[in-house]
Amino acid sequence: MKPFDLFVTNGTIVTAHGEYRGSIAVAEGRVAAIVAPGVDLPAMRTIDATGRHILPGLWHVHCHFREPGHTYKEDFESGSRAAAAGGIAFCIDMTNNTPHPTTLETFEMKKEAIAPKAHVDYAIYGGGLYPKTCLDLGKAGAIGIKIFNTRHVKEVYPYITELGVVDHGILYELYEAIAETGLVGSVHHDDTEWCKRLTFRDYINPGKVENKYYMECYERGYMYGHGMVAGLASSLYYARLTKLRLHVLHLGVMPVGAYEMLRHAKFDLKQDVSAELEAASLFMSQEQAERVGPFAYLWAHSAEAGWNSLRDGVADMLVGEHAPHSVEDVEPGWEDNFSVPLGITGAQEFVPLMLNAVNEGRMTLQDVARFCALQPAQRFGLYPRKGALELGADADITIVDLKRETVFRKEDMHSRAGHTSWEGMKVRGMPVFTIVRGQVVMDEGRIVGEPGLGRFTPGILARDDGPAPNVERLHQAEVVAQAASQQAAGGPALE
Ligand SMILES: [Zn+2]
Image 1 (cartoon, rainbow, N blue to C red):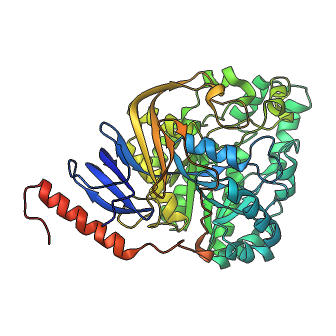
Image 2 (image 1 turned 180 degrees about the horizontal axis):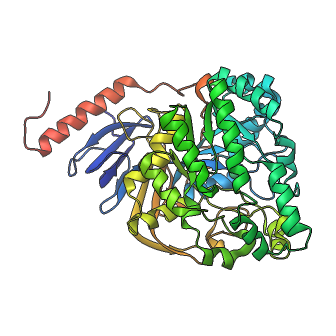
Image 3 (image 1 turned 30 degrees about the vertical axis):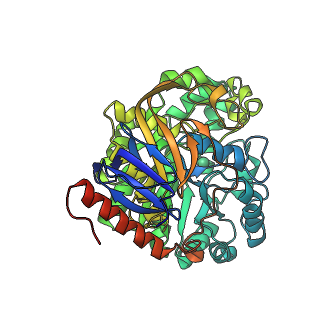
């Protein structure tokens, strides 16, 4: 019997449903055995997790790593390195690239460009623009189809203007096409004309454009507000007619009307709809937003509605949104915030922010395992291969230390953006190891994995479970683990 490749010992193993003390042995990149604390197994490398928590590899399902096309803001290497440093073992990347991955050709181009750069496993969305390409994108491995049912009020994101689907006829045709593939259709909703008209009337035309007015405009629900709820209303109806598996983006910044509609759709109408909530919106204080101005994350219109949605099942997953722009792109926002993109970072800060909330008693580690691993993996069709620490699953593991503290500083960020929305904020609770298929990528804060270690993970239409595991070896591993457990318990060893 070869030794195990990795043995993570004596930590508290956290699942979506409970916690227990134990150790995890890895062979062939998979979870090969889970044993009681104190049981010793031979391994090439042992990580002592005493006093720490062992979580399933955490997901970040809303990354904009800007490649191809806008790599001066971020590329797949720097973005996925930030994620790995932040305890993220799996990323889903968005579509506002140049060229955008809306056709088979551009989708394949993107796959090829990013493959050598990823530090963690990843999936990518296909861009929803042409109904007739959705099936091709799914067959080529898209995890879902992303639709921007929105445009910026001043069109300052050119690549979102190109991707914007604000014509409801085309939106409906896209829903028909995506529904036929069985993939999830993930939508950023809005009512762009409504949003533009009121924002221009009360802010841009009278010259009230500084950061403080932008915040006021957001607070009043003109931008990223009621228009999003109105967009959601029609989208839910079209999704119901077409039987689209709708996934609602940006719940965390939407006013309470969105939560009410989703509750009705999910629980009264039994519609196949899921939603992701920006955890970051729950953690961004007004004080922090004022401190970093145009670099701020948008705080929740209703934090209470956000927290409740985690308890009542309206929200299915938590995200940090990572949408980096360079300092030069965003800095002019102090003077005119309507003419610059929002400078949002989150890949590296997301897990520490959640651990801080765990320490504050606002959520539990089980919530983190549920909303950032199990439920995303289930929704996007990758469970049980990923999303939970179960026998035979990919050995994606995030180890966290709830006692470790840090203060977010731009100097410590791996993102190329050169800033953090959380500058100066102190948090308690840090990821200390990121492990992808048994390979250690981040070790006590240091990146030790090479770019290219992360693997492209196709969605349900092109499902590929990767190289087959050595089943015999996994089976042997189980036998060895059982024998060691018996011995540790003082019972007879298995023959
Ligand atoms: Zn986004």
